Amino acid sequence: MIQDDLYSRAEHQAEPSSAPLAQSGMDQPSVYIVLLNWNGWQDTLECISSLDSMEYKNWHAVVVDNGSTDDSVERLKEACPEVTILETHKNLGFAAGNNVGIRLALKSRADYVFVLNNDTTVFPDTISAFVGFAEKHPTAALMGPRIDRRNPQREWPIRRKLDLLTQLCTFTALRRIVTRIPVIRGVFYCTGSRPSVVQFLAGSALFFRATAFEKVGLFDESTFLDFEELIMAEKVRRGGLSAYFVPPARIWHKGSASAAKLRAKRYIENAKSEEYFFSQYVRLSPLGRSIVRLVRFSTFGARALRYRNYREHFAEFMDALLSNHSINVG
Image (cartoon, rainbow, N blue to C red; front, top):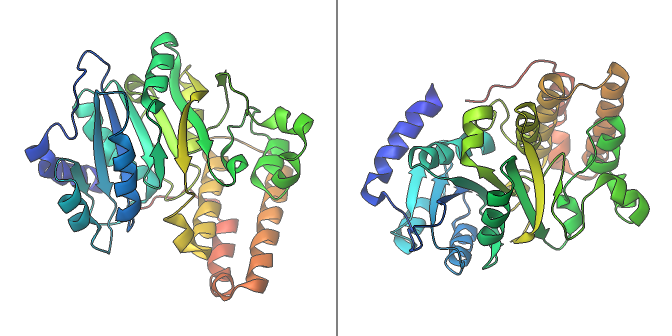
């Protein structure tokens, strides 16, 4: 497979630095932090800088450059020569790109793998909080932090099973109303200060027990962008394991720095991933799917009235919206 070939080349590149950013504290569980970079070396350097301030010591950073077309690789190598940089040489998307780093982490016998957006920064106790919780909760396979950002409700963990009502109230414009009413908000989201089992976590920061990958597999590479975290949460539950919100662990997230550059393309990829998710993982009734598609069509149509970029890609959007076949990128 192409991903395996890319991983083999990337692994060979990593050999001169077999223990990137290794710290003291080898009695602690090993944590590998996977950062996916796509034309965003400035954000990646800020993230790595925040990692240097962590109180947890036994961690290793792996940057996967996902086919950047700028000078990201040169910049990162110059600024952080001790960091392992894996080059895919093409944009594989979120799932396949992160899988390159995860495979290296597993080969290196990581105990935990932290898949972290490059446009985030961590706090000194972020990893300590995750590891401390995970060591006491052996069924916790997937964990997410409290995410601080200018609009934090966009990344609140979802506590309710994903049916039509949850889909409409958490993934459409109705979310703006739901998040403002505490009683209703509590039905759909986890916002408290205590750890709790959840249905879905935000994809900007996903902390995995490494052994979970052996049981449920890596990210599903059939999607290019979006819904990866929902798919992984479903895989975790199917494997008899649990996803947890761990609020003592915190990060700061700037918010979709790379994806924001894609505009209409981002929305189209989201629609493709949603179609795949509902066809392979969570089934809605035909009426439910029709309602979700109608909402998505109305949202794209409203944007098309305002923005030329959306009008130019309208036909491509309709093809994605009406597609019933699975996606296989790369």
